[in-house]
Image (cartoon, rainbow, N blue to C red):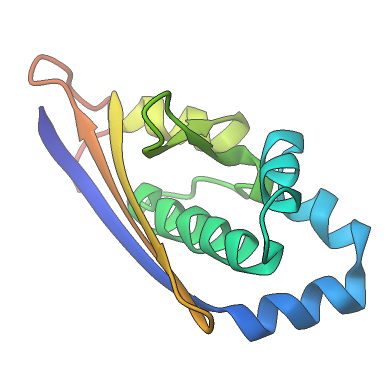
Length: 138
């Protein structure tokens, strides 16, 4: 596996709490997939889990940004899911999936962490050694 890119992001939980209070269900539906919403609602402090997913989505956007115009990647185009063993990973949809394909991305490493006040995520994109990106360096 060859690393393609890395992204990192930090989100204040308090800002997410305020956003969810102000925008309510509209924010939940705009920012998260149905599976993400279900997971976050089931947690003791849902806003922390929303915040860490937003950090992961932003980290993925940063990793996917390859200097080309990738168009608008929507919040739900990057989905944070748990693998069978509990580790987080990503499922890409729409433009995020198209961009990852163009970059030759075949897998991800995702690390999430949060405290009562901060949520952070790191996303590393990989391609298989035999995979080559379909764009050219300028």
